[in-house]
Structures are given as C-alpha cells and as structure tokens.
Length: 162
Image (cartoon, rainbow, N blue to C red; front, side, top):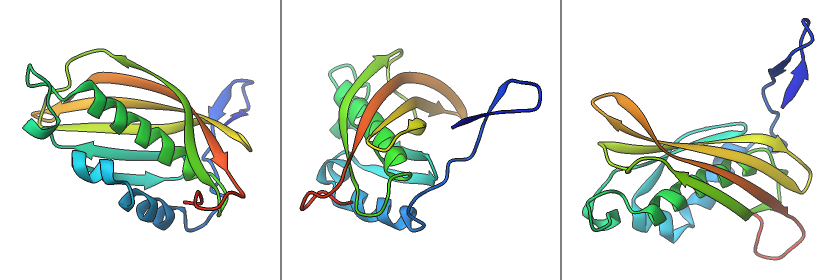
C-alpha cells in the first residue's frame, strides 16, 4: 500500500477494493457469525482496507478480575483484521485467518473496546493485517492489545465465499 513520493520516501496510498459492494458483503458475512452476536461485537466502520469493530464490556465477556477476557479481545482483533482483508478481496472470495499473534499490553476495561483492523499488504492469496485494540474511558483511548495476522483468500470452494 506504499508508493514512492517526490522526495524519495514512501506514502501510504488508499487501497482499491476489487468488489465495489465490499461494504454490504462484509455486513452480510459478519451477520452470519454467531460468536460476534454472542460476544456483543458490532461493526463501527468499514472502508477499503480497514474495519473497526466495537464491544461493550459486560459480565458476559469478563474474566475473573472483571476485565474483558483475552479470548474475547483476540476474537475482536482477529475479526477486525479478517474483515479489513476481505474488503480488498475479489467477489467470490472468502477469508480465513492462517495465523495471528496478539500482544495483550494492558487490561481491557473501559466504557467501550474498539478494534481497528487495517491491511498492511494485500496479496493475491495472502494478506497481512494489523489490529490495534483500544479501551475508551471518558473519551480517552488506551492501547490494550495489538494483533498481527496473515489471512488467506479462499476461492473456488463451495460454502466459503463471503
């Protein structure tokens, strides 16, 4: 997503979606995910190469100390990265995570937890993405997790097109 600029450096360019209806496709696919419904995760924003999801902390997604459980944070972050990747994939492709690493840097607690997934490099088969997860309290953001992921475009398989 980088291109040379006049001074020899590199600037991020806006990614081009291969499917003009990527936003509707993501919303339809997201609605099929039972885990997102169970956890109470919703879509906040969708743009080419970027998806933002939100989670309101509750007892249903907490761990023993009252923080949002790391499993819920990981699902939130992975899903944001996956849909950011899908936003740049062609119509008929499905997205599957092939690996991710998450760093949990602070307890996830606040009024709302936001995951901002973005594509770092979109390839024909593999896409690299990152997600920052922040907790918002009194309008202030605090980084609580950082995820890096590799996602695969699945094409030509029955039942996997998103």
